[in-house]
Image 1 (cartoon, rainbow over the protein chains, first blue to last red):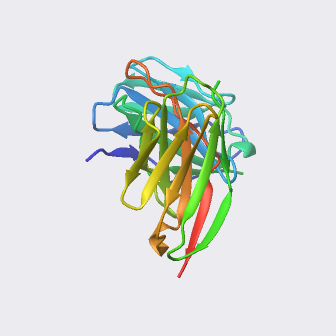
Image 2: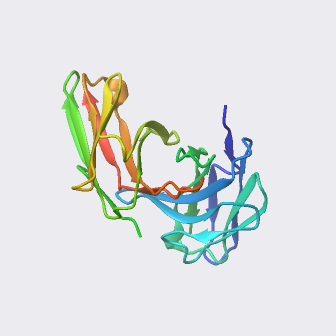
Image 3: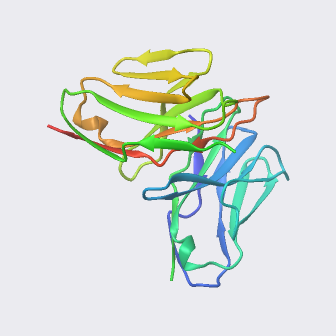
Length: 111
Length: 114
């Protein structure tokens, strides 16, 4: 059973703080993704990675960066959190056949 | 890049009725079209998918149809049950060489009333 674990379910941060969201998968998947989920906007792709130390911008990368130092771990970084980054963040991994396996999500509130 | 539009945003049906959700995509190169279901407070999960070499696929009460010429695909749920209540997302991508980057629609909130 594929397991994608996100380190924090709920976070509250202040404007300007640096925020780290961690994601770990246990199925040796090459592909990992970070999406942002907002009501009425669906799931929007922030960044993705097809291999260790490799990253590609998605549709909304502004204000975010990522790190993939190990195959199983993909981190999303908000260098200076802003209130418009208040959202649900979903990590996913994929074996490359199209199917995504999602984590439970991290709900971030920026005050 | 790919853009996916999904309609309707909300759908309310009586138990036992059918529900249809429609999506259009912009990139004619896309060849893989999955549907995800997200129950309240849970993670999205794949329920059915279709590839561009197939026009229709069925799995018990759910089916997906694809019209490549018109660049649209639809999810059909028959004999709806209260447990079908959820948010449904369509997506599209070009599957190539083991890489996939899914672009999702905005979602449809389906409510099935007993």
